[in-house]
Length: 449
Image (cartoon, rainbow, N blue to C red):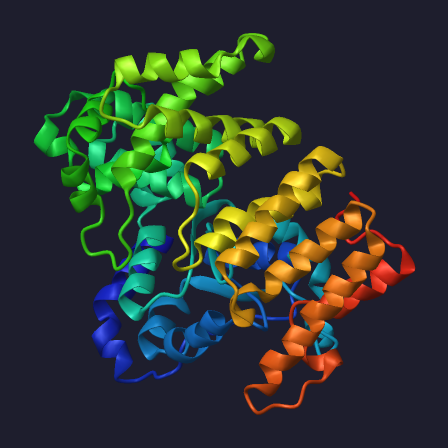
């Protein structure tokens, strides 16, 4: 019944527009249970707009989309539309406050991870579709029509897939929807199906398409050195990179990344997980990789793979040893933000993760190098704070306090250089002042849980 009425509404839309002008009508003051009962009694779909008061795109949807007459005419006769606020505020109305408990349930039950999120249910309260992010009129209308078309609802598509009724294109779409619906295990099984039964069986020219590369990159755990994509990427990295980077402002060495990850997985992760780590021989492994893959930098790949592996296992001693060796052999560039990502970030990870002196000394070494690479105050002010925190965790409290004071003074200099008056309470954007207070009070400045 909903479907037939909905289709009539779509075809009559141009006529109805002559007489109506309001956008989507949102129902408020009802609990989630009452919304479901109302939808069931009126045989209507449910549209739920999940938003936050601070969300710019949410306000854009209110102004430009929900207020549009076309959507009001399309949805109001067939949907119970409700808004669900995810954040809380002292200015919240009593109606909003009364929905806090339901909002928390909805966030948990339907895995709300971004704002705005759109949830669509049938009249029985069963989730039919989920989407997120600001949309234009055309995009949002398309979502609504997919909801109305029961053949394209998520539950129906899952059922059709299990009956082997979907073609390749439909399975790719179902995979994307499974990710949005937070059906991780199902999405993984779909990804494996797509790779094994479609991508592994097509020609090189058909395989080397941007959407296929993107899919395989997101499912890199399914790729092995025996696969065609690995062999093509190894042999023709420039061609593969040109396809992957087409239309992108920022170019990345995707081919090098894929080859490195596969080799690391097969030669390091798989090996270390099956044997005593003390028997792992670095030189022998590098030699083996060089023989198998003469086109790659085996030393760099194995070093990177080792420090990634040990970081994933939270083995900070081995991580710091191998990462330090990597930095010695492949020092970071002085250009751009490489000092931040290659030196400051790893140093901060060690400071935040372990109190072991050996690791902290490596971290201190790296941050000292970062400060030398970026001598200008505006480039390294956060590095000063990192050094202070590392010194503090090493037990060198006086030096740490002196260094944190230098960081705060640097923040003041940068603020005043812009012609502004420095207010420590308002302008301490990095939180240096709070760190200094903890140091003076003998409190941890690192995570304690």
